[in-house]
Amino acid sequence: MTPGASGTKAPEHVTLSLESTAELLSRVRVGESAAREVLLSRYLLPLRRWAHGRLPDIARDLLDTDDLVQDTLLRTLSRLEDLVPTGDGAFLAYLRQALLNRLKDHLRRLRRRPAREPLKDTLLDDKPSQLEIAIGSETLAKYDEAMLLLPSHQQEAVMLRVEMGFSYEQIARYLGCRSANTARMTVARALLRLATAMKVANGRPG
Amino acid sequence: MEDQDDDAALLKVAEAVSDGNPVDWDAAQSRHDEAEIDLAHLQALEGVAAAFRATRQDMESSGSTSAGPFSPSARGSDDPHALDLQRRSKDGTPSGWRRSGIIRAAALGTLALAALYLAARLLWNR
Image (cartoon, rainbow over all chains, first blue to last red; front, side):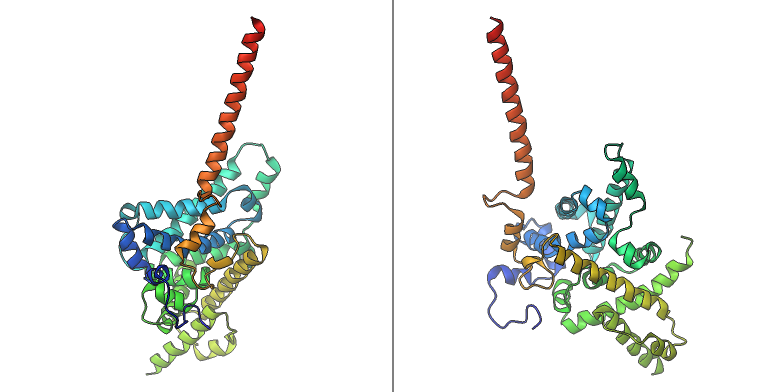
């Protein structure tokens, strides 16, 4: 059974959670803390997993990734007006880039850290993340670069499906699509566009 | 019409990539020889998607940031009350506050010990 397909009446907090991310964001903007909580519960754990995959094993021991993710998410939600423009998908696309930047900063700081743990610091220099091991640094860099060439709602579709493993039903609910099938088509179209964008990214000097 | 068929077939390939289903890349390449989208890049995306899936599975099996009710594949992952369980300790204190509370308590303890030591030294000198 697909998640959320049950015919039983949902409790109030679940009804609230059926809102799209855009709807929840507009409620957060007017100060509704319940909407903020739903967004946190929706994205915190998947983003933590996402962030862990982006770090080398050794850096995952060294820095508190979970706090970093939570802090970025909370900071983004508390300064929505300043940070995230309105529009479909802008929130996650912004969050993704903000997290990537913060992870890079942390890795840089760890590498520069003076010699309390010199062995670990040198190890960091050439230790790739799990994703880099699996895909290769160059492909991952091209992929990240190509993602930035996509409109934000397509970035969000790819992130939710490919990077975070959400079901189509969840994606439909979060993006405000009419059905899981529409969400499936949205993701497929986004992937085709991403493939074209990777071609463009490939043509650029690395 | 042919273009539409082409688009539909490419969308099917993209769907398979998204779902982690196997794709016959040789057959796809022969069908879309003139395709604007380079199938090689779609194939690279297949690898990217597989790597993200493997990373997620690894996280779940290793128990880091445990799956529980917050897994994207789990029902009710939006439940704000469930989130509270994750973010708060048994006494209802958010984890960040708990940590800073411990640090504060340790600092106060150290100050108290230092004050006791100074008082003892003063008394001893008299």
